[in-house]
Length: 604
Image (cartoon, rainbow, N blue to C red):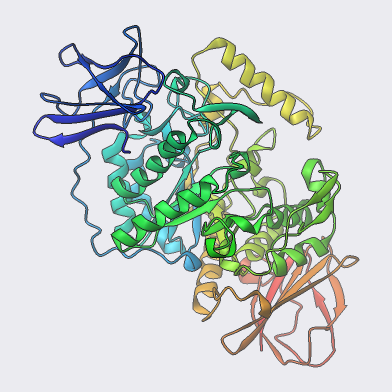
């Protein structure tokens, strides 16, 4: 069942809303001319097809002849979350008929927040920068959530309207222009969607029906009703939302936020039903569409095919890879990082992805995870920075503010030369030093206080000292804006060239993204703080050495009898290193000496 306002052309519009417990529902047109149009009930849905309704018409739904509320499936909220919904004409002249997408295994992802990526903070302002991203090697941008949130600034995870494109970003037409331009540049578009909660302000959806259940609780309050009474139509709401973005906006993939908070004990999990519907649309449109989960469950069931008992999603984020790499770089063992106190954890992440695959977790005080050894490596997305991991810090510092210049290069190599799909966080490619702090623009004073108090409580878990920046303050938001001009100067430009070179290296070696984890071996030396891995790719054997020690180290060559030839070294002077002391060729069991916080790639 399609929901919302669907403009049919010639001044004709169909309105559909689910409100199973209401006695009467009507469309209340507030502009351009006030009128009330009664709706007819069909099962739990109310519908009416009305004439003389043009695009731009503003409306509410009138419930039981009393309260008026915006459309829960509103396509646009031009007057913010409390204002009327607007009828949208989705016709658009697309120029991407020859667009075939970017295969998942070939993606170089780039997480982007629309409001802070440019000074203007709009979809349109992103377009002139696509050429620069493409030249670095980026071929997929992931837009953080763009569903309508209160005010003009927000991380995006406080959205109250799943179908409505944020008004301050430019609205529906500008989003389509951005997607169309991305496709012209060979860039896929991934959209971050939130199916585990609604934002607290402007959230009127419970006025319409039992969208929530008290059976479960989430970090954001009552859980969305995916398996209780009336859950079929709640599931339909979110499935229609996914299809809406993919169909109307030509989005190439959806990133599903925190799926561990989607509670469903039914025989067919909501995620499996979602995957089935997206697969049908993908087949009908003749293009591959992907679903990518964020999850801290370490459960490969998410990405296993349904015929093998999985949900059939295409990929998932890997927290374990991030955590083990982050602790290796910083030595930070506070909070959940305490589970990643050994270099062998990063070595295991290279081989198995999940470090905790039914191993005991000190932080959780229980066994955690399951083996993903049957899943190809290209089903996992890895990073060293993302919005959460930066924002989880009280001052929102990026990695470039926490570690040395050499360690920044080491982090880039660790991610970009991994067997997994790499994802960069905007600005990372030139070592941006602007913070990325949680920010909001609520209007309810009690809610603002609750958000401020909540941030303080969160940082106590990380033993952070001092006061966190005010999430409501506009200055907090403004200091998160990228300093785009820095990418052309000094060490920032060198890091940009460094990222470009590593991405090219990854793309030029045939078979890098085969996904076969059987050809990967890895190991570590805890005393030396050394991690290494080898891979067999397309008739070649690769060896990568990663030194996390802040001093130079000497170690024995225990990587087989191959004759290794060096193809990259981060300590070379052209990368502003102090000069490599690793040999150009490694033969036999010689001793090797390596610069601090550096990495090198060899082939045999």
